[in-house]
Image 1: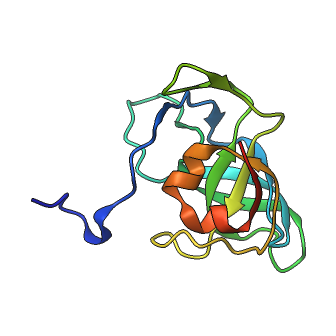
Image 2: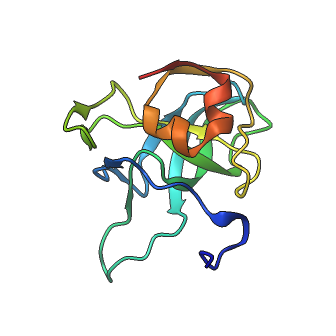
Length: 143
């Protein structure tokens, strides 16, 4: 019995992630891909209700437009993964975790989730390391 998807899909999250980042939010890009600030324009696999604002949280795949950064990345659309959020979310063991900022990592391919940069600034949660191992390889600290 398969999942019906090519590649087996993503692993399940081991936390109850509260969705706190809206479409239209400006977030920090935490890798060295050349982008500094990005705007969330779309959320992959979002199925919502009419007139409801789409939201995302840690571990969600989004599409961003770079607003501030190097000239070759500004005003271009990239896929990205949300790695930090300010709003606390609950882990499976009952603890709650939150960060100082909302941040994302720009990825090359939407299917393999390989990061475009080579260094990640700041911590990332353990939930990201389980679901996206390529992002964990370049991170400096896992919380």
